[in-house]
Length: 429
Ligand code: DCP
Ligand code: MG
Image (cartoon, rainbow, N blue to C red; front, side, top):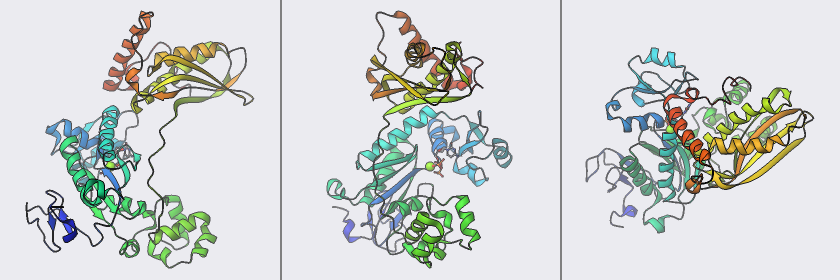
């Protein structure tokens, strides 16, 4: 290796030149973004989280926003989805009501979320991760664990440098920034990725784990939410250091399996593996009624609404379904499922709905239902979905109309377009 990672204790995150310990600026490019750590080249578990994700995507697409405070949010829920780091200086936070955010930061540019765009970018980021290792475990749209053990021989570089290169590549090719946490286990990799945001690169090694954790609040531990932290607080436990002094048996007696988990994580013991998520096998939507329904006409608009939900989801996930599944639950809790395999896979609400309707017709024999669901299964790549229908020109026209409505919905929000079937039925479930 030209840059001889083995001879240096660190490297520059901008130009990747190896650095001897103690330098403040890169000996090659002058950048202050140097990483040092005694265990730097032994650690293999990473957590990556994009910085101010939705806001960064919007800034990338509109350079005028670069130095402005930007808030993504609004719409139906009226809360902040995220804010860029400039808006955060003024106190804006995710999940804050929009009016409060604007009180804190009146100059902010507010942008409605464009989920489709963020899903696409999230997928591009994931694809670059997957070039490094198949062991990528996404946690959400903008974060994932990576296990890079054993990849050094393949990449001729230790994981730390591979990750710095990835961060650089995501900035250059996708145009957003990430923060990296590198450690020997998932728990501390995740904690690390949050330490230095944005554009962070933090390392937590074996040797310092216990000392690093000691002063931190118990809420740092994965799975310790507000409620459980309250319970611990009542027992006088606030910091991880306090947990470190307790016996495993004592913690187990008090808090069961969670107690055991606390004991282990407090000591930096976490042997959970990084495993790619199972791909979804089906996509569906269902609703339980306030009052049982038996009439076909009353079920139709609900089926339409659910079909639209399913369609939105498959489009968002980038899949298509080859089989439509109708699900009913009767008033006496008996389940019925009915399947129909389609000629071609579909993503379209209209096809899902019409197939579901056909199946539903045979089931509405006066039976009272308490639940209706519709979904698709046999998921495939959408490339071959919904070819133009040469026989049924109507279907082709409906498909084109649906594509046009999708565009409108993207632009103006879900409520902008209502079809005849769902109009006025929105409060039903
Ligand atoms: N999000 C949301 N509502 C929340 C939290 C998050 O809609 N209450 C969305 C917007 C975020 C995205 O999820 O951009 C990713 O969530 P993160 O918690 O990773 O937050 P950010 O990426 O925005 O910021 P950070 O730099 O802190 O990771
Ligand atoms: Mg993030």
